[in-house]
Figure 1 (cartoon, rainbow, N blue to C red):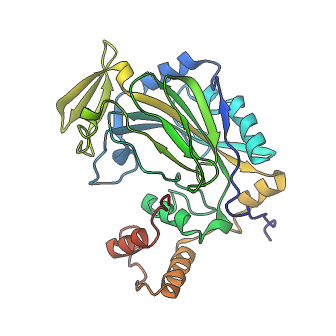
Figure 2 (figure 1 turned 30 degrees about the horizontal axis):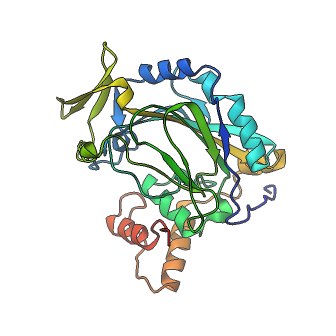
Length: 316
C-alpha cells in the first residue's frame, strides 16, 4: 500500500525569492552556454513537428533528475537554488529535476502563461507535451500535481526582454525584472504563477524570426557572434549580446521524506486511461461532445477539443 500523500491546497502560491547572485561562477555558466552551440529550435527540442520556432532556441542540461550535458553538474546542484526552494515552498526535501538554457532572438512579448506542470505518472515522457498545459489549466488534475520550484537566471544587457510575473494572481498587480541582467534570478512557483517574457529587441525586428523553420539552428561563430541558419542557408548574424540568454532550473519540493517516498511509491500515479476518463467526464458535464481518442498521442480531433476547452486564463 502506498504512503498517504498531502494534496497541496489549490491557489496557494509559494512566494517568489530573488537571488542576486544566482551562481557562484557566472562565467562558467556563460562558457557552458557557448559550449551548447549549435542550438536547435524549441520546436525541434520538444519534437513538435511542423511548428515554427518564433526565434526561440533551447538545450537541456539535465532531465529526469540526471545531468545530460557534460559540465553542468555544479550548476544543477546549486545550493542557492536548493536553499531558496526550501524556504519558498516550506519543504524539507528538494530534488533537482531539470535544467535548460533558453536563447531568445528578437520577438514580440509572450502572453501570460504557466509552465508545463509535473504530475505523478504524467510528465512529458508519459503524455504528449501539448496535453500538459490543458491538464494544468483545467484544474482537474491538481491532486496529482508535484510542487516544483523554478529558478530563472538571466544574462542579457540588450533591449527589452523583461520578466513579468503575477505572484498574487492575474487580478492583482504584476512585478517585473528588467535588464541589464547579470547572474540574477527569481525562484518561483511557475507551474501555478502566471508569468511572461516581454518583447525582446527593437520593435522593427519583432517578427523577423516568426517563420524560422523547425530545423533552424543558432550557432556561435569563432568570432563570438550568433549565426542563424534556416533550411541550411544563412539567415542572420547577431552580436553575442543581442541574444537573450537565460537558464531555467527546476526542482521537486516535498514537505518531508514521507512525501518524497509517496512520490517514489507510484501508487498514486495517473495513466492514460485515467486522464482520458477525467477529461471526458468533465467535458460531458459541460456539454462538450468528444470521443475517446483512437491514439492518445496523435489523435488530432482529441487534441483540438482539449486545447480549445482548457485554454490559458487571461487577465480581466
